Structure formats: structure tokens, C-alpha cells
Length: 193
Image (cartoon, rainbow, N blue to C red; front, side, top):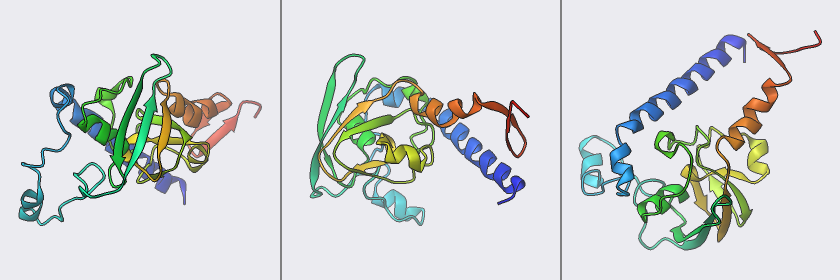
């Protein structure tokens, strides 16, 4: 991939993230009242079919009511609080907790993209297994190290995870690499050169 293609991809990702962060600000009153993310009466199967869409099932959409459920515990190391729910295997962890009325103590939650890009909803998996879907904001290395984005993670077993400090994953992925040298078009230039 040449540098122009890399720039175009980076710009598209930035535009996507900015659009969703700014777009969700208008929904802040909805989320602060702890209402479900998706009003299934308004955005149900009929709404989708009228627009030529397949109704969604699972993820942030309502899932199969008979889906297998797993015990998911989210720990907050700062406050010592724990949040536990039986999360269906076809639902994203963050959205299910939100739908159940939990106000997870995440910094900048009102600005999170809710699309797997911004890393605001990062958790560290302590026990259990999850499946990440469309998690653009987390590299393979950090997924292997046990980090996950709860807004696009399905439980595959009972899970115990821990909220991370604000921007912890973001800094580990991007911030630390910028400390080693200047950034110029086309890549990193070591300070020694």
C-alpha cells in the first residue's frame, strides 16, 4: 500500500470517528436518562423493512430472547465497584449493560464513538473469552494482550473484565510510539537521523 492510500484510509477513519463522536452529542440526553440505545418500537423490523434493510439481530440491536447467557462482571479499579449482568451471547457487552440501566464509570462516555474506534470503552479481560467484531480501534497485539472494546465484544464464556484508565489503550497503541521520534509524511524518522 503506498503512502497516498495510507493517507486516504487514515482520513476516512478520522472522519468516521469524528462524525460519530459529534453525532452522538445530540443523543447525550437520551443516554443520560439510561434509556435503551435502540427504541425497538420505533426502530424495529417494520422500520428496517420500510427502508429496504434487514432488521438487525444482536450486537446493539435486540437479540434472540432465547440466546444463551453468560455472567459478565465489569470491575472498576478506581472505585472498587463491580457490575454484573447475564449477557446474551448475541449482544455487545457495553450496550447490554447500558440497556440494563448500568452507568459504567467511563471517562468521556458521552463522546465515545460506540463503533469500536475510539477506545473509550476499553476493558482488560481477566477471565473468560470474548469475540470482538469490527474493533478498528484496537490492534491485534493488544487484543492478544487481553484488551477489548466492550462496545463491540460478545461474551463467549463467563467473563470478568476491568475498566481501564482514560486513554490507557490509546496511549499504549499510539502515544508511546510518538515518543521515540518525529513523525513525517511516510513514517517515523528516528531522532538520531
